[in-house]
Length: 68
Image 1 (cartoon, rainbow, N blue to C red):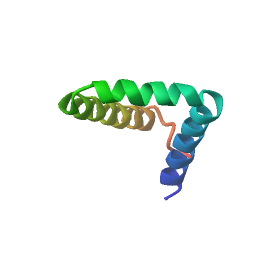
Image 2 (cartoon, rainbow, N blue to C red):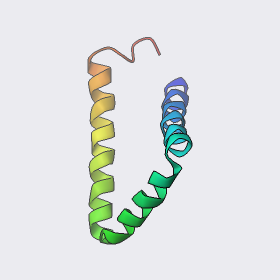
Image 3 (cartoon, rainbow, N blue to C red):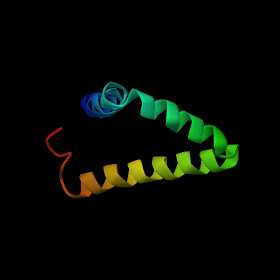
């Protein structure tokens, strides 16, 4: 449970920084996403998901999660 809260907190920090420091960039990003076909967005989401799982696995292998 602690690991899930840690992950959620880190995501919230990164998301909050983007909205706080560059709110107009979000508008441009959303417009650019609307230009990408649905299937390409789905593939991009799957690639990011896979990358996230890989990084969690790598952190586990390197022992970064042992203290949690």
